[in-house]
Length: 332
Image 1 (cartoon, helix red, strand yellow):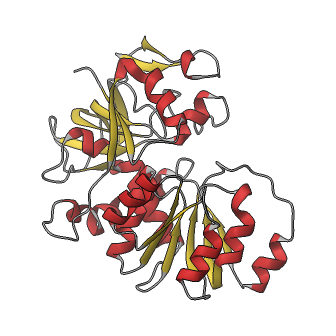
Image 2 (image 1 turned 30 degrees about the vertical axis):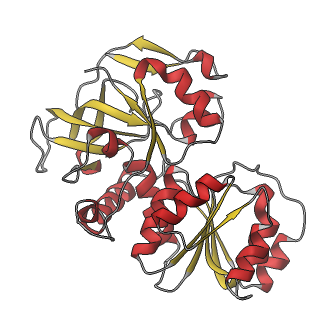
């Protein structure tokens, strides 16, 4: 099979398609013939040598995929049959023509969605669901500040926060992105290049601050985050795009707010946790991708690249211009 590969860490120019052995399904695993996969920041970090796959995971890039069940391994107990369409959360290996996955991590593709749309759901939407509900304990009426509001996770978090009865606020770096965020259900948006999002969030909440922050930026935003956090607010850190270092009185400011700082990664979680997350998401959220009306959920796709254009896809993601997901289409 063909797979996205790189021999040494570095820039997008190191990526190429390599012919590798097609895997076969092990105990309680399913082999998926991949139709599409989507890019995540983790792919860029892994390519740069900064984010190795968890022990035992494929070293091929790709944390999510959609496709058809091609083979059932011994011991499979679930409802899956050969030929069934499915989408999957992966610790790696999605950017290839075939990938193996524990059967408990497969999800049905909601009626009315294409394979390309389905590929944009697992990693981003499961992350957003986990951050809001399992970690953030989001409640109706909560104000939720979503950084990188037009990323894959951001576009999912806006819609899920809205569905929970919360008030989604976003930061983004262009007027175009803020307009798109409002179309998805954001109540307000702040252009971090033109204004202090912290002061703007405080003004919007009439000085009360935000109840929940979803933060993939980290270091460079710490002071503004803690400044606009409400009393007893929850600040969830799930990425470090703005660096890992801070200097200043973070703890005293956080303590003064009685704030909770919670950190999370999804890729390194164990299989039991991921299966619990997939089951909860499948039951509670997936049906809303097929409903008609204003509560309908939609994966947001920015661009689709053929698998052999993987270098261009990475270069584009590095510009931070994407609104929603960048999807890779596999040769069939």
